[in-house]
Length: 154
Figure (cartoon, rainbow, N blue to C red):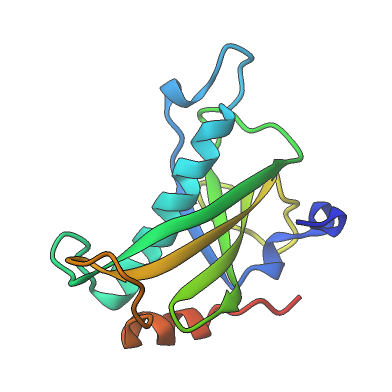
């Protein structure tokens, strides 16, 4: 991750997925606990893939497992803030995909105008593996097509 991440805006991400915060997401400091951001990333990525490809993660013959993740925080968010996770494919390999993710404040879950600043920026690497043997496999075709449409432009 780089220092230029602070300058990212919602318009830098081709996909925006609304996410809800919960009362229990706040910590004793009155903002979302850092671990919650990872749950938001996981939810947004998998909901986006499953919704757009019709994948049933319980029966698919493959799994997308997290091999690496990280997050930098730039401003506070808290329940009941409506948020969105911006997704962009940073790298698309044969068996893995690296995402750049941004968390944004929204108005009722809608990202306006594409100029909202990031509250946090994350990266996430999924490696696709065979469900039975847990060995890397090529990214499934329908998912690869979806990922290709979400490549980073910046």
